[in-house]
Image 1 (cartoon, rainbow, N blue to C red):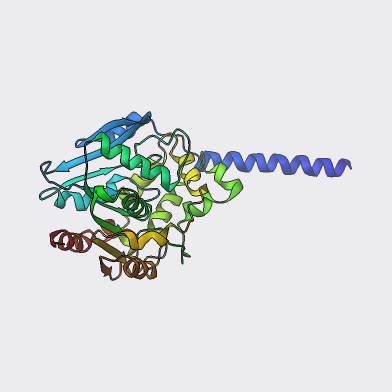
Image 2 (tube, rainbow, N blue to C red; image 1 turned 135 degrees about the vertical axis):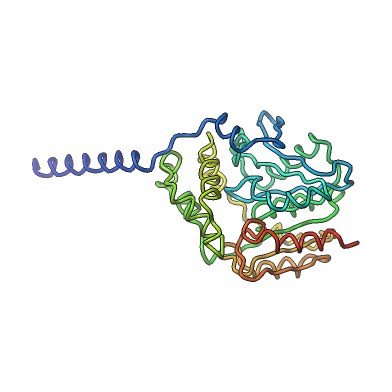
Length: 317
């Protein structure tokens, strides 16, 4: 018995020692908001308050444009994912983008409700706050899901839709980013809120790119540092814990707005078969498949993907 207690004592001490070493090597404290704001919220960034949350957004380009383009990023990302597109589009359009609650520099939801319904409510409040009555709305991945669901709920407020590797249909990924996997494991997800290895962020970004060489240190660091904003790691876990599976996609044919379905053919997270399904179910859609491109074409292939966007926007529907 004494030998057993001695063994358990040694084993317990070893586990504690391992945890201390892991915490020392991989543990990162939250980065102060002021520090992140100085780095990632330079002009033309602005902030507004919605439901007690401080919301980071950018409103650029021709403010006289009748239908501004509203762009919504995906899970784990930020408004910066549309930098390249915006740098061109702002010369001919008004472009509005925001950090969703729990990502980038926007506060997490106060009630930790990361359902699609709550995001739709947030987008509606945000557009009301900045005075946008009708727009062209688009998004990538989660942002695309929010865009088409917002359209169904607010048909009179949407002129056109841009769906970029959008989610919303039941699907099975061929490959999932490492951060997503960790955030869904019961024990590890709790540790993830204070032990977040930097390589996990880089690996997760590389996972959604076809050409891994395009994932620069600057890009990987941006994703990593914004993850360390206070509350964002817990929000990431809370978001992936929400069951957003539903049969709402069956209402897709009710969307009459002209819609661009833009997809990378090498997307392993939401495979290209889903693009075909969007195209089939949407009555007024245009399908563009980009070769040798992954889940985030606006980052990986900005020029090529922007050509499709500009062509679609230039069409009279």
